[in-house]
Length: 632
Image 1: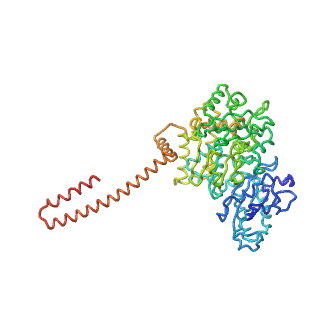
Image 2 (image 1 turned 90 degrees about the horizontal axis):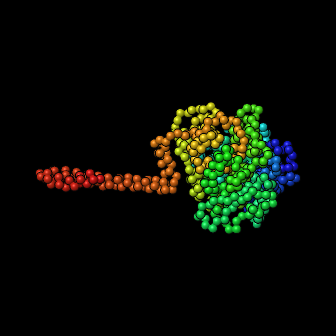
Image 3 (image 1 turned 120 degrees about the horizontal axis):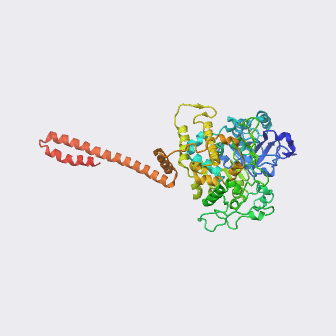
């Protein structure tokens, strides 16, 4: 890449790559244009060390189970001038007997290959649409030596995407928040809060296209996240070998790249975890990040994930007494209790974020985050300083889940081994069943939705599910549509940020959940955002969009939420459904039995009336039958 010079850096598409499956060598690069390594041929198969997982990402696990599919993935930058590299891969399989030119190494009945685009711009859906057409044409040739079509694809994509801005609907092509809410319902807001807390979130489902679609759709709810918030989301160091020491990869970063993390070694995994902060790391003190001697389900969790809520209250109280926000106490006595991922150097003043010349709607470079931000300081710098976004993780990247230099992640996986390692994630999102599995009861308490939150989620759900007259709103599209839903989450985040700046913030933030906001205020993304003044925030009215007095409807909403989501509520609901079904079936059986008895009684009475002159003999047997029915 370095040999291509500065001119290639401006191109939106970096490489077109073909990955195939070899029966002996496994997944391997068969073609790349331009070559992935300088001074090598297109078919050399060489890979930069940072991109060693590319073949396993482009041709994911279980690809042989599907005729075709698409996967999104992220690669780390090759040098300091680059940012995250966005990968889109379309894979297909074809019967070997259908090939016009069959090479000697084709020994299986089917041939699996992926055509992959490595890009500098996060236009996942747009790249997928173009790539699917070319992949189809490439396979229809039935001659994989015809690489001219791939070279034309490289030139065409760079010609059509050059100069295009990351604005408008093309960024969100293929990402539907409407479908997400229909599937996850109110749990979408829980996922939103999970990522704000910078937790370790693992999405799991198969096939892979459904996985990456769900994960990226959740991220699209954060304003500006897809466009500008993922630039530093893939800064990790690949494992050089299986036997590599865990400390080898953490000796080279500079001091400012370190994340202060402590690994707690606990004998009894059932005890409540309360983290203790490791002192700030100095150059050469890499021994402080050695893993614990005895692994446990809690050994990979850092103390910011298992922090005692009382500590948060102490920090907030101390900050309020000092007349400043919690971040101002970071360098003092209380700050030593929390891991620091952002610590502005003393003597360097943090001023207000400058506005662009073009007006309030412009995008400028963030002073602290390094990301391109709007006038509200968004996107929040969530995916920075070791917090990764990996839409798809190959099994070869499993070590990243327990890497001490990775403070968190939002990742997707299709391999069952990721799901079985529950202790390495704070939350596992089962996309198929729309279920969020959280082991830590303290985290579940932080994520408990308030009444105002439930109103917000119910408001979205009703607009998505109910048949309403189409109402087109300027700037947000159709009411209940994808753009409208993203606008609602933007409003939610704007009011949340504005509430933290208000004098009466404690009362206003209670509607978002006091435990949640207390935990969020010590995250890296909030401290960086709060370190700048964003003048446009004065235009935002603080307070939850759905704040207000409680009503009977809120009680019903809370009861419905509890029954649908708690395990006890689900058991009660299932028991009620089973009982109701059994009662109905029993009622039908009894009704048929009683009805038959009545019919027999009527026939008997008619017969007796015609043959006997004494009515008493008729009335006596009918009386018990009539009494029996009334009891039923």
